[in-house]
Amino acid sequence: MFEDKLNRSDAEKNFTQFDFSKEATFDSLWWEIWLKTFAYTVILLTGIIVNLCVIMTVFIVRTMRKTINFYLVNLASADLVLSVCFMWVPLSNNISRPTGAFICKLDSFAQTIIWLF
Image (cartoon, rainbow, N blue to C red; front, side, top):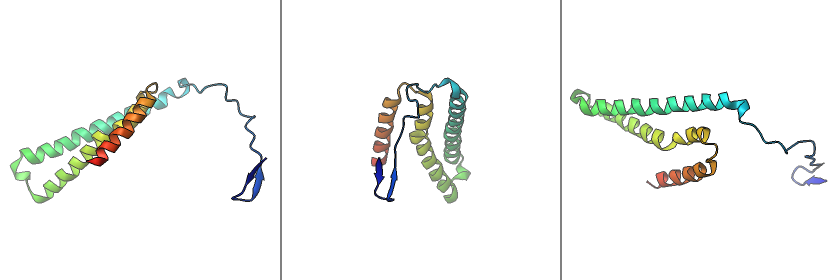
């Protein structure tokens, strides 16, 4: 018996009804993995391309060099940094199932390094 001291109730933890001997198959959700990968790729590439276009437009066209446009460049550059530094993590988690431990360590390392700057 398991006694829950916080809620003052007794409950029996019985996990024998579940069969943990079989591993989950990835074949049943292959379409979900492809859909997520496609969506993350589209969002990542769109974010990078559009933000680079905003930054380049303001710096190339002289008439666009006004205070409000420099504010938009600042927003675009912040969004670009976030897209480049953090959007690859969910994409890599969907693509690379066998290298999950490596991606997990690389993700925490990259986010720690980025937060230091």
